[in-house]
Length: 112
Length: 117
Image 1 (cartoon, rainbow over the protein chains, first blue to last red):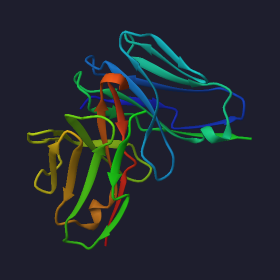
Image 2: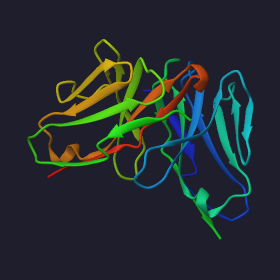
Image 3: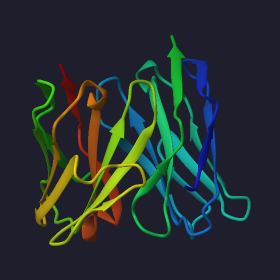
């Protein structure tokens, strides 16, 4: 199947610093790229998404960038807080439908 | 955002029995829902696409006779794990595509923990 690669697998930052998570995808038909935050024992929570006709999107402390030519997209979290600590997954749609291929996840730890 | 509800959140069943998990879209209609499985400390893997009024589409390696999917209405899809075995113990999560005011976005349920003993 088509792959989504996600890096890093773990990320530790000090409170107030920025965190960046990067993903690449291989399916040229992918046109929707959501990011999810998953806390232990819970389902994934959508935090931001971007579509293929947009290069950047921002929502308060969270931003996502997309380079469709290079097939990579990134999540940027600024002014991190301890409650941002969780596992973050990037995803890309498959075959222009709405099933998702997920990255392997990034465990983000924000220390006070 | 839109709400996708799963029930039960946790279930324990005996080996050899069947268990049903429900996925409901609470404030929108979903012609298509998706079922994923997630093992501890791993990513989500798509099991099948649930289509309202028609047969589900299963991913390679997923047994359709073991994981029965029914999508009888625009707000409900069910996953039945038949003849469950301990290796079926996992976190099962559904998602649905919300359109209209939700902007064509994919939302996930809270997941269902299945433990087979």
